[in-house]
Image (cartoon, rainbow, N blue to C red):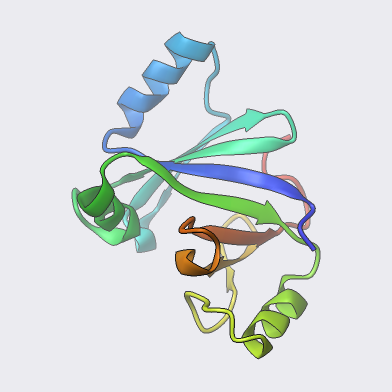
Length: 139
């Protein structure tokens, strides 16, 4: 069912400051930085072995899911994303099993991945993202 950790998502107030800090601390640079306007979020992707670190920051303070997360929790772990092979099949099984899911259906995002979220109360109070990718985001 779960193949590997696809990424770990961390919410931060200032994406550029975080990137600079990680460059100094760990001598790594993001492989990609994107803006998800519909989510009011900027995202930096760091490649770490077979997984990624996904750093999320609101475009406008307090707006979007990351803005809300920061307002309620401050900076920190936002979610863990797990790679799966057949998200639609897994999603249907979870719906039948009455698992609390965040949205009505999985979403296709800009990078071509199909994603879905499980409510934190189902997974030890950790927001869980399921990700199906046809190809690696970062090579």
